[in-house]
Image (cartoon, rainbow over all chains, first blue to last red; front, top):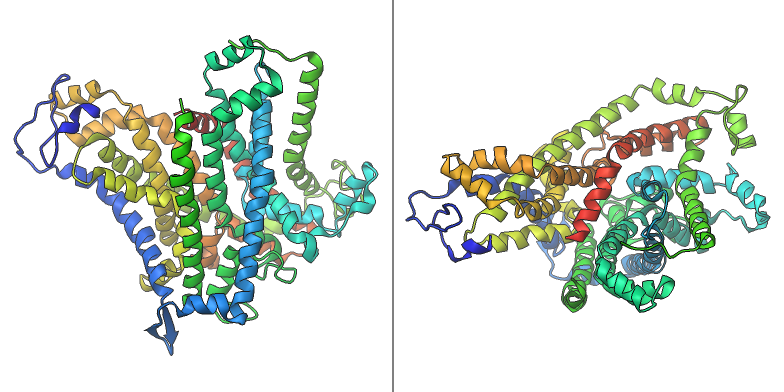
Length: 326
Length: 279
């Protein structure tokens, strides 16, 4: 497309056999509009307008079903009113822990698996790859219930398995205890989603030019040192992509916790994250009535958090990592 | 070519690690599937054993399928997934073609506008989406879910497809133009067939999150007539808290279609991820 960049405006594009012939505008290029219209229409109406409208709703409060502009009052309530702020800060804290756990556990495991899988001449590569990616394909509902059953003291599979390696006394109903429930959910989520960083990094490792690896081998840099000093710096941009994907999906998570612990994110709200807090606030539950405006306020906070994360990535990390790319 | 540098001992260690991790990935799924075919007593008494002649039991499946709703859930998921997939692929390919083929005012701005949807999850607009669906009387319809998933899938589809369409030979399209083909014919007859592998990749990527989504069915279409498998299994399992046969059977039934799709498409999927990252 580089060649035709000179053509601007509504001039019809009609290059002939490698040449670019700029003809006078005979027809308006309606076909461009026809090609773009359906996608733009659905995307704008169903996604962009509601997003903007949600941001707008966070500035209103409904008094006797009449919306009333209240400025940033809803945010003040969310941050400082003890009825809300306690839950909000706890959800934010838990969500931050959720994200940090994924960054420190999921992504390193993904890198390690990718490094092993990309070893030259490894047998059964396709099989391992398919197996490692299987949990990622399953829905949160399946994953959540499967692990809920397996970790349930009622069934007792886990104590039997732990007993087989002599650790039966380690078993606790991890999902039912305040202190361990969130970490257990993090581990389940890592189990499910480790496939994504693994695949992306695996692909990046395969894309490293052979000359680079061969040059390293000639210099006697092999094995672990080769991975650490040669390959890891080269795949940093991909690790950056994995990090921002993890960030967005973690601060938008909901399904797994809803499936395993319900909308109240039990026990005792110890697994509450922003997604479950939003759902509970918006729809109400056994404890309170639904509040669309406060729901919109929480959604706006999630939007700002995700926007901040994406900006840090795009302007801070992405541009700086460019120079490593081939 | 790379020379293999690892000793047999190293290679055995690598395989040991990989096999252990494979067991961790497949084990839980197998455990659920195997136990769904057993009697209640053996589910609890010997959870790790395979179903034998004395412990084989289909009571769970009878309970689940006897309810008759599960097949409806499958049908709903299928309608919603196929409907949104068709819309995402057709509209996405058309928009990708326009963005990659023509120079016009606002081209890159439009690209950026669509890219916004890659980074910002559609879920954050839920409050307003529900208001809109209520106003349009679309709550508890397949159409509501199809529209939402189409909007959700479009940004990534346009992004990936326009990358591939840039690679389609210009001479081929120009030859078509000289022969007097319309731009529509060029798109449908020349470009679309050439980017079919990319379309398949996008299809797999778009399909998984739609099939697995719980949030929007729960909010926009929770009615019995429009429940998807994911939401249905969620509600269904909650109902049978103590009937372990039924729970395990329902879970296995929910896993089955995903597993079949995965086995069919895993090569495509993995090639897609690999090709995308190489770019």
